[in-house]
Image 1: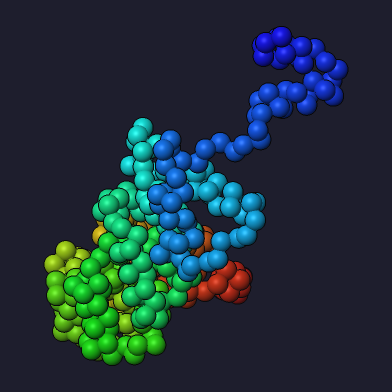
Image 2 (image 1 turned 180 degrees about the vertical axis):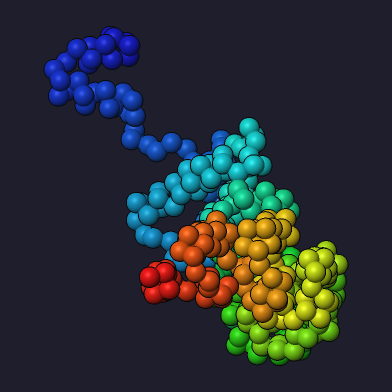
Length: 343
């Protein structure tokens, strides 16, 4: 009886034996599918994931179960991740194990690898060694492992920065120009990760000098509260915002006083913030420029969720309320205000 006849014979056996024989025929030796291409051996394969420089070395688990679970992580997880990011191609089967490790390195840190590769294509060819050097450098400056996911997620360009020419000058700027002590680097960088991808010569120092000329003297406030102003370009962002305030009818000195009182004005969009809010203030509220001069924080409130609803309620009640009181009050305080003044 040949092998085909034996197989057919077994398939006709009772259920218990039938099920056993089916299992034996499908996997006669109980072997796992091959993890490497033909001709490759474990000795010539890429180093295991636990040896990735993005992570501290760990002792591989002993026993057969441990040795099987580790390659499974490499062969299944990266494929799922790679299929989602923009640089995934039909040749994914030829993507190196090192590249898969890099994807996992990013994902385990909490970084969306697809988004990171899309925003910084240089990551595609960056080595794990270079990424590890950047991580090590940032940790030497006080940045914690738990901070890296958010920092790299917001600014994946950091992962391919040059430590000597890009990153180190930023920390020198924080130390010597803003008087930030080493132990506070983490606080400032977490507040504004974009500092790490900003040129000290072309962006940070020019912004600092311009802000100081306007009257921003508090270096502590610039470093810890408003570092976003330092990553703003003078010609493209800061000057146009100030010029727009002047175009509304404010004097240059008044406009400067407004941004000193409310630095956030430098971060607001002219088209999406200033224009619609000023139009409502001017045409619907019939407000006076002096009110905005004294309370520039008006532009920081939501037009649809705070300004319009409260103004309409004030009008309906026929009462007068100052701009700060109308907008700064909590919902409960505002209702009480309406009750008291509206009868």
